Length: 378
Image 1 (cartoon, rainbow, N blue to C red):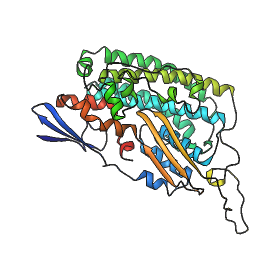
Image 2 (cartoon, one colour):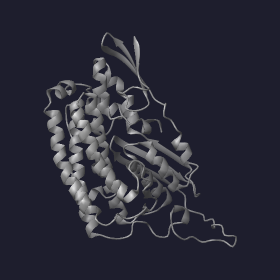
Image 3 (tube, helix red, strand yellow):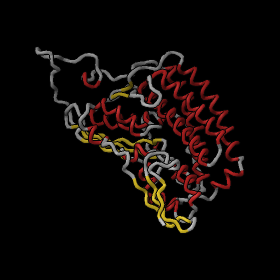
Image 4 (cartoon, helix red, strand yellow):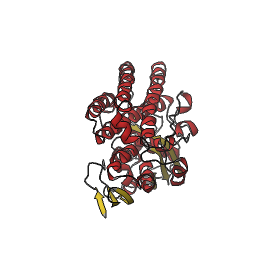
């Protein structure tokens, strides 16, 4: 018989439906249904100024909004032939790695709760708040930030941010040890996660699966290492790898990624302390955030013929490889905007890692995928 796990179901972690064909308790076939949360973000972006699109990026993935801002901004800057200053690039990486930890901690809290472990959920949400406090201090937001701009970032970090950040990073490293004790030291956790939801390297590559799911199968691919963007070629960190290709492997990869993000952030805050400077590119047109622009006799902004261009950006978002494609035809709005969602691809391979397991195994397996439906449907 066919049963519906969604669209309103605690397993889904978002508005989507997983149709499951079962025989007794065994999963025989699955049919993921997406589209319940579609908002037309790509088309709406084509009718907005370049910086107005940033508002939509925060709503694309509600746990990694600033990473999607970074993705779009890089493509828009290529299309517009804009080069941001060095300090802005380092602040962007600070934001992206803070967001990676916040996203993974949110995943950890929700994932372990699905397994019946309540204490880790409370600890995870407590620690995520520390990072959101930092975001709020210089962006004004805790979930939707609207902080990055074409040509840089909206404002510099307030005084004392780097010192407070170091204290938070020390706290988080101690907490990660506790997280591992609560999970890897739990017999219940190991029985529910080991050898579950296996997706081998060949299947990951065939379906285009990326991110922690790919690295948990032993494939060494991380865009921050393989195709460095921003300033990732100037910081030292290790790629998080596992080889079990199961739920436990995905857990181990994400836990190691958080430790490596802390390592990156320590280097970033040290650099920011030593290198003050501007955070926005000079000589931008007013509709890109510049304070002044030429004005005609009637008071309207003078039209310019801006150079055309195409931008293609790829970043290692917390869920996997995300891509943005922006076409500039010389106007104040992008002519075309297109995104690739890593979670959409990871969900598309669900048949490979769900069929053959029990119905009760579906929540931990799907929890290990780390589903964000906002970026799936867009």
